Image 1 (cartoon, protein in one colour):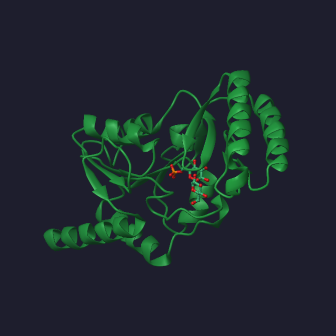
Image 2 (image 1 turned 30 degrees about the vertical axis):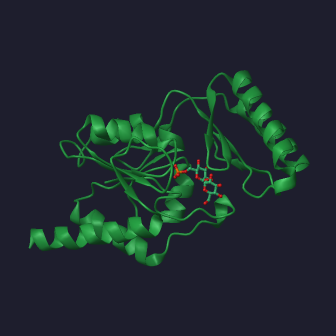
Length: 241
Ligand SMILES: O=P(O)(O)OC[C@H]1O[C@H](O[C@H]2O[C@H](CO)[C@@H](O)[C@H](O)[C@H]2O)[C@H](O)[C@@H](O)[C@@H]1O
């Protein structure tokens, strides 16, 4: 079971730090983890440290920053290499830009940066989008190590060289996932790579919400995801007794 986080496990909220996973959903996920003998992973654009905090005490296999960060069997975190000093330059310039645009928020993810525009007022949005897009593309060209990904009300300056498809391959190559059929659930463009990789392994793919997708199935929103997971848990419990 491979789950995206924002927009899939949790509803989207105004600020990245304001997200919360309800205690009953954590309990559900912990139960699923037990039943699936550990074969449950969260594959997210967020950094691992954040994910660990938001999910606690649920502690699944985690892949962060769209696959550029992962945990090994001993729980150690790994990140694709990048030039921290060069990224710091980008961080300083993008922070200055966000200070000039009310509502524009810079998220520092360690190895990647995101410019969120969900809270920019409608009358300022066009200008903010033009400036934010130009600035973040310029930083991607300067760095060479990063690419721009346009997510939900966000420009993500993420590490190149990996995506959620590679994250799925990484997870599925190891126990306890190896040899099982993946189920990938996600809501955003970045999850399409995960769907492709899951399909290649005859997996089940579920898109959350509206919009074009290569996924085979559809759930309306995170509440529907929770209900579906609860139904799976119920059925699997019945069949394993
Ligand atoms: O791959 P995901 O787990 O879906 O992460 C994608 C991005 O999610 C977060 O941003 C999104 O959710 C925020 C909180 O609901 C919302 O305010 C924002 O507009 C969304 O884009 C996160 O902050 C990013 O770092 C992730 O890349």
